[in-house]
Length: 80
Length: 254
Image (cartoon, each protein chain N blue to C red):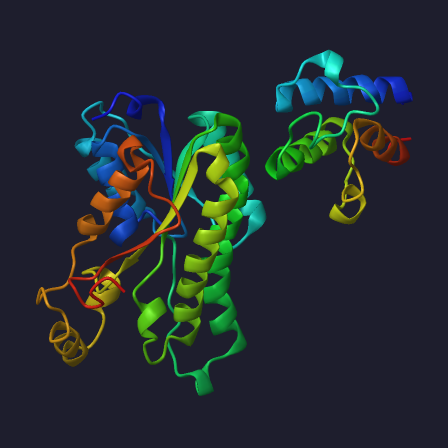
């Protein structure tokens, strides 16, 4: 799966779950500060990514993820 | 009845008898579409269906599903079946429970573990499964049946008291975690309630218990169910993380 494809899916997920405008979702966007996500939003978002990409994202790996770009990179490393 | 009731679905675990059955009946009478799980008692489950259907003004019949709440797979199947047949569970009543009473020195590993697994871990499984859809809906009611035995610590119930005390701590954490999503979680701590479980106890024990109860009688299952109905309602929207005793005054609030 191409990085661009993963980004688009994650962007759609952010729009759906976090209720943000699509143009606010870019690689640099920080979940907490820029997209107003609280801890429950982030859990929901991670579970959403696991479902969409059929991957497992353990807590330890999710911890360091602060931006949309980092989330895309994490998923990219999981899908072949 | 409030206007929101009609579309809401309530799940009661352990609905084939006792407090669980009464919860299904009273929630049905209050206009909710109920589902309930039962572990093995088909006749009891059918009786609950009959009584709840009669109690429902709208003629709603509860959905009974054989399920083992101590198994996460079984809990997942329980919810999937309800979602397929009825819709999303908005009100979760964790009532299913077992006892394996014996003195600590004689308590076998499985007697301890079975009680924890069903009475405590089972509630964890159902809450985890229910919470995602409650979050999406931005509305949910979790009502966990604890017991005054969590405070009293009766002889022969180290396992049961541990599980019921665990329910209280877990309810408070859950209440805090989901508060921002308009999901409330509360626990009810019944005292001695006249169910089949209590009917099997020795006469002498019952007389001793009675002498400690200011209201001088045992509680009826529907006296628990009425609070469940209130906690499930919109009227209880500002109540979360609490433990409410219904014990005839034994603990005077504790």
